[in-house]
Length: 345
Image (cartoon, rainbow, N blue to C red; front, side, top):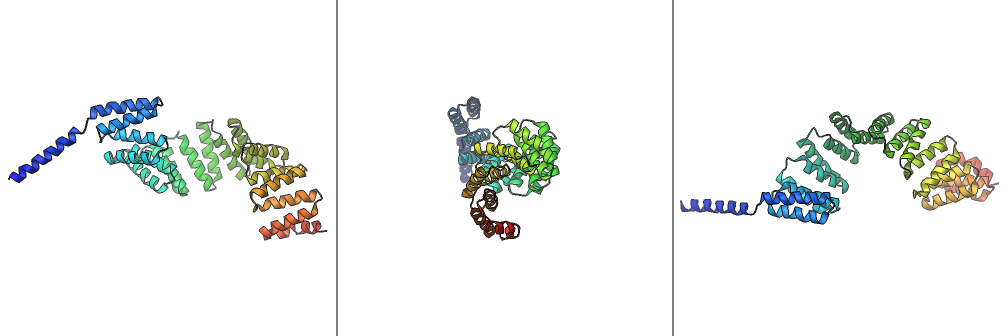
């Protein structure tokens, strides 16, 4: 009997000690102060307040959450994940905690873990369009575009004016080469937010793949008007100009993209092609040479430089470039054979 009473006394002592370590009211005050300081941009002070809140009440899941989010905003992802994990342990039915941690896992390219968290977030709050949309995004990152589309459909069903869901679904359709769907989704995204250059650029790209080049051009125009530094739009518009024999305009677009810092081999090759068609062969040769320096395996650049040399009456260099092109892609032999014969004479 004495043993039984001893156990009860020990249990009561443990409860008293546990309660003594908690001060929920003071913890809540420091939490509130931390949020106010963070909103003012005083992050160090905010961090201290969240830490005090946690020290006063280890069960204050909101303090763990806010401190975790603050760590994440400062790119301290391990600490952020740790704090969010504590919040989840305390309140495992709170969807936003899984959402926050899942978003960090997306940032750190841990897509499997992100999927686990978004599955939980959707399970806890199945009518939250944001969580369903973000789970779709993780599916897309895992290259499961069909399942991603299903989640985006659900998100749009939950919120018919959800801009991100339309744009995300549009990008998924782009990966599935469903260009009509891409046009439809980005048309809706533009209706909801007409100020994003990427929407016009992507719809323009879809139009171009549907061979509707003169529908693509106004979208690329709008993209560069919306964001004058958006190099992808200049490049895409430049290719439309090349394909419609508007070589001076193409030259200007590729020149703009290169000056903005998009200096890859394909852009030099494309600008060189525009120079060639404008019969500016020395400039074309310079661009093709630069493209080859950047990517020695870019066969098109050898072919194009060969023609620029040939038209400049430099047959030996033309022949040399075409021979290199054929060595890289033997299938080109039939189409270049007659030119190579002319260059060898």
